Amino acid sequence: MMAPHIQRQKSQTANIIINTNQAQVWDVLKVFNDVYTWAPGVEVSNALGNKRQQVGAGRYCKLADFGEIEEYITRWEEGTGFVYNVTSLGPLTNGLSSWWLTAVEAKKTRLNVEFAYDLRYGLLGRTMHQLIMKNKLKRSLQDTLTSLKKRVETGEMFRPLLQAAA
Picture (spheres, one colour):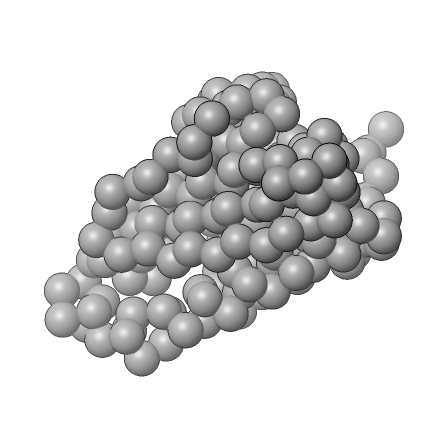
């Protein structure tokens, strides 16, 4: 199954080869709400609502150096990938992100990620994007994939899993 292509004004893409089978990568990705345990740019994340691992599931994320966002799954392909929308932040609006796995070999999986978005605030938004956001997004996306690779291949978490309140 091919990864969906998202149409927006701007996009950032990245991919990485993870040295394990697709099911093991999926085991980490599918826990949508625990992104903070492997993504260095996400300081806190937690579930929004009662849905999990399905269309409509949502999460709140506090991003280091970016602010706060909410993300809601709009497409879920069990074992393969998902697409989620991202609330507006700074000059970025109408954000969608696609995370898609493809088996390369028995013990190699390619993760393709696309983050596509529109710009708001006219000239100011375009200037902010060009001077600050574009490069910051590119670095953040690649750092996130590198950290996920380490998490899947070694089991090491970037941040410890927080225990749910009893």
